Each structure stands twice: as structure tokens, then as C-alpha cells.
Image (cartoon, rainbow, N blue to C red; front, side, top):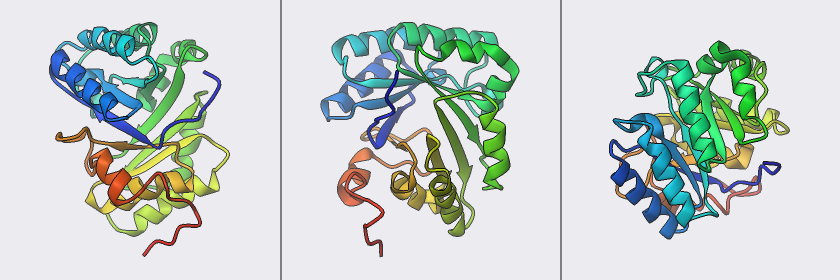
Length: 238
């Protein structure tokens, strides 16, 4: 996967049943969305998500699927071991997923096992903080110890200035493939403006459903109300 040219919006799909996951994915693809995150850990039987992914991509080969299977210890829903987590992600790549999102805690514990994904899929190494927005430089240095295609830093905004800190970090590291988001209602500006400052994409909820993280809104709102795909650094924001 040589190119990092991606849509600005990724639809985060988190469903407890495989039929619902396939239904949502199909609906989003029909609406024109081409970058979808499959949260395998939301399924009661995560392995079923691999079959859904394969069926969906057989119907929609131009779509890009990011496979995620977040462990419960890292604020996901997957109760399996790290080995089981990586095996599921490996199966997802074999089924056609073009990227995997692996939390830094798993990456550090798994060692060289994460490197096996490189060249087969984009590797996104992610950090999540559900309490605050701490200093980002030490976090980035921690992430960068694991070779990856994209580094994702997700924090929680407790005050408006946290948006500026997150966005300024992305701008200062413009040559590094990053995803930056401040979660929560206070962090909504970071979801709208992140791609302007260098974030590869932002996350949105599927139509008519709740998202997988605090502060997510529907792609339609990002696209048609906030015109995220037309924003640039030259845009005037009031």
C-alpha cells in the first residue's frame, strides 16, 4: 500500500451483530462513503466480522476498510489475548482490509509481530486518552518507536484550548502521517479542522446511529454543514 491518499472522512462502524454491520456498511457505501472502520470488537463474536468484511469488499472493491479490534483493557470490547487480537486482524487483512488500527499498548507488548502487517496493509498505531489532553510530544515519541504508516493521537478535550494544542501539534509535524482528534463535545472543532492542519482523516458516525467515540457526528453533517472537504488553511473560520 504505497499511497496515503485517503478520503477526509472515515465512517466508524460498531455493531453487535454481523448482519447489522453489513447493513450499515452497505448503506454507507451506497451513500458514497469509501473509507470505513470495522470495529470487530463490537461484535459478540468478533471473528464473524471477518466474513462480513470479505462479503462487503466483494460487493464494494473500491472501498477501503480499516480493521480494528480494540482490547477491553484499552477501552475496547475485545476480551481475548493479544495473540488472538492479532490473529483476527491478520484474518481481516487476508479478507481484504487495507489497514489495521492497533493500540500502542498491544504494539508494545507484541513486539515484532506488528511488523508482519507492514507491506500487507497500512498500520495505524494509536494512542487514546479518555480523560484529558496531556503533552503530546512524549506520546508521539512513544508511538514512533513502533514503525507504522500512520500514528493516531486521540485525547479528550476539557477546555477549548485543547483543540488548538492538538491541531498545532499536527501542523508542527506536517511531514508525519498523523490522525489527531480531541474527543468529547468540547473537542468537536478538532474533528472539523483536523484535516486542514494535517490530520489524514477524521471519524464520523454512520447515518442514523451513534458513533464509537464521544463527539462523533454523521458524515453528512461534516460534509454539508461544515463543508469539511472544502476547508483549507486559507478558509476563514468565524
